[in-house]
Length: 236
Image (cartoon, rainbow, N blue to C red; front, side):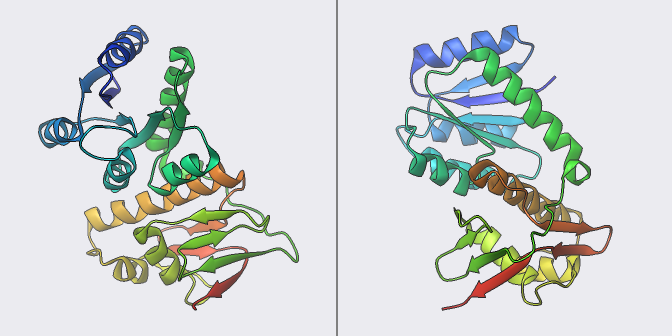
């Protein structure tokens, strides 16, 4: 059974979410603060976290960035903030999905099922973007932005910047997993590889969610990754 932890300080909404998701077959734990959330995560195992942006003791954006480093956990933001900049900030923080209150419980349940399948499916379910002749992406290292070939800017986390810096040292060439692990400061072990795969997975989803494009990050089986589109790197 999928286990979900919900961080929401509105008691009535929290109880409603727990009740409706339980009826849909999910196991839920509800908390009202970031402190309580991290206490539960320290002692229990969860598949997905649903996080309100406006918690009393910590921003949901900051929480999402911490949780996004967990390779096997999905992050859903649920908030009253529905502006485009808020959504972009949510995805940039590491959220897999972003919902604006009020949310239909059946829609949320369907999204949870879909996210769970993607988390379990890993890299095998990812489609690689085709290269469009004459179209180029831009990686701006100084502004932490990846611009798509359709000129949509995507804000990056520090881990995503480090990954792209390692991947694009030699654009168009395959970069080994070892090199990318070194660029990220991860050990060459099971945990390091899981973290690397999580960064790739979330970056691909962010590009698709924000820009509607497939990210041109191609997996070279058992060897490494390749950025499969034309790209310009801006260093200053």
